Length: 167
Image 1 (cartoon, helix red, strand yellow):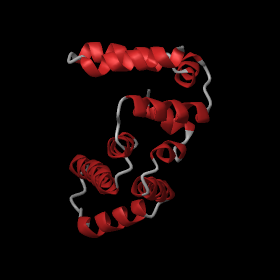
Image 2 (image 1 turned 45 degrees about the horizontal axis):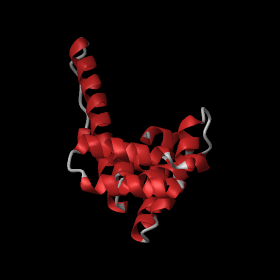
Image 3 (image 1 turned 180 degrees about the vertical axis):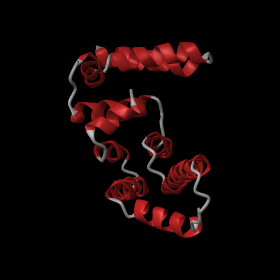
Image 4 (image 1 turned 30 degrees about the horizontal axis):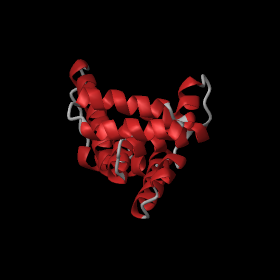
């Protein structure tokens, strides 16, 4: 009986042009799914429950693996190109801090090879455990993406990372 109700509601969803009405019907269909319903009503859901619910939500919402991969990479700041941007911003902050100290001091002797210091800073950051973990996570996710393993994208994430993605 429940499956017939879901099929009927889903058929209505496909016929409606209004986005808000479609969203309400989609939420109604998702609400009838026991896995999603249990996840939503559980104050302490397990990682497995989150993974299954996120995956089912994506299926209901016709989310492609490309969309999901892009969202995960963006939300968790895992894009390797973003690492360098982030490191550059960190270095700018440190350089401005040093320059401010120079202007505040009476000592006019200030010479630093910022280029060399920058290169060392970037090298150290990119080889730090933090960035190595991010790179490994990105590589694992990219591997699942390349194999078209949608659900495995979520399985690769920690409970905290799934929470960060949000429902």
